[in-house]
Image (cartoon, rainbow, N blue to C red; front, side):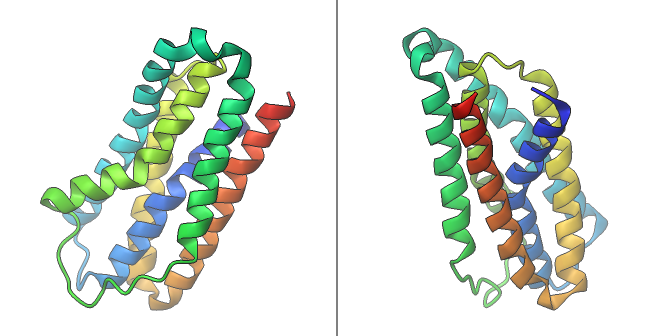
Length: 185
């Protein structure tokens, strides 16, 4: 898979993390360097590990689904992309009660929730016989950078929350288009 496709997938997968980071930045009274590091590091780590887990899971079922691999990849990516688009239309007034999202179970739950789509991508990579090491690194670094940027953006611009929905929609459309490309190859 060419570098630019892996990069596009990485950015698309990071849109959930970016969106959550923007929302956190909007809701947090202050964003310290430590909070930024914790959220960015954990989102990046989970985004990097989930494709690996999906890829490993794909190895176990690969022989059963090789014939249908392009279709399975398409449906997985289309599902994840569609979910991202749907979620971008939901409103969230989570600033009403503040709890630091960079600590404890909140951090773990957010990290898992923002990286589940990467699990499906890893499964697709396995089924399509793509290597996983470089995509995992690229996905993790991209999520880390976009999470940090999202926190900064959310803190800096209170109006940025409307743009995060657009970014999530674009990410969803990109995943669907990549799924179509895999299907048509």
